[in-house]
Length: 97
Image (cartoon, rainbow, N blue to C red; front, side, top):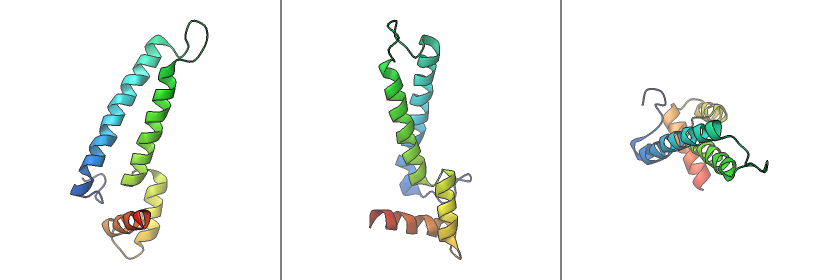
């Protein structure tokens, strides 16, 4: 995992979920783009809420994996003297504890 070297083999199922969410989000975005955000009565389509919830879920996964800017900053601060993998392990332990 050259782009995110702190991700361990045990994280791969979460990485897959993140990637799956990206595919689903892109599909939902396409659907919204092609068919619009509103119904004929000008009410928002239910798909907008689904899209929003999936984006939020993906953001939480990104944070858990250390992929967001804030998560990387927190990892870097925690790393002071440790390698990034050790910092990620500390963060996971702190989050679980």
